[in-house]
Image (tube, rainbow, N blue to C red; front, side, top):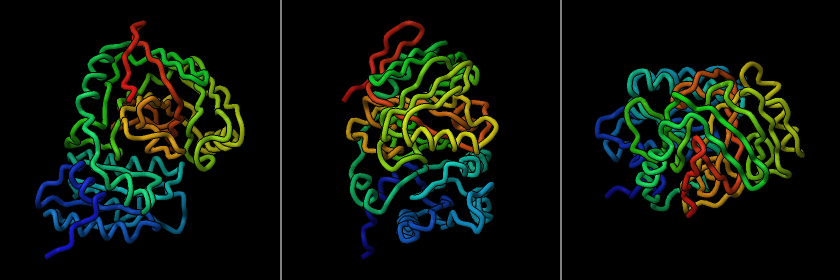
Length: 321
């Protein structure tokens, strides 16, 4: 009798909607080699045909995916990508994987900043059913031209979204789509000149300090671009990341609203941005699955607490628990 695969493997296989006979590309970075092997074996037990590839190379950050990853992405119909130590300026290379998959109807699940301990604990637990609240929120927001979002720490931002699709990773993963795991957000790519006001990220900003921010990070937007970044150490690190990333890095990329009732912010981007009572605004790249048209080398989510949303002047009832 074969050993039962770990709970986190079962959760990923279910979220990816694996069908018997599918080619599955499993990507991990070097700290997760053992977990990559576990996942590949679980995929095989579930009837898939796994290909395990490593996100590694002699010259990091990578401008393009490793050759084996690209080769696998051309034929796989499902990709599961686990990264413990993602680099902010490898976002374009990561997007390239999804774009290669999407071109022939492949699907991708991405887990960033994931550790073995996290996989074996929270990510091995049964995940909540979020499709219904996601569909309800999507219906409320559909067709809005302007979003006004505020936050407890001082966020006061107006975003033009006319014509852009509202999306959610809480819906079943379909052909040509990519999603993060765990799921739990509704999101949109605002128009690249459509952001004015102030964003105050009082929770988490990835690729800066470990954990929650040392001090709120304040980004001021004018006509879609960040004109200043103020705060403590996290703000200083974000300014450098944006400056080093070059063209498009300072442009509005995304608004996301968290739905997951079982998560609490703790300085982990991929969890904090899903948590109920949070929202995030990203800068940088938003092409492909995001539905936008801004190219950049980075995509940085800035997460804040207790959002309040109006759509064309109408208050929106957000999930709170």
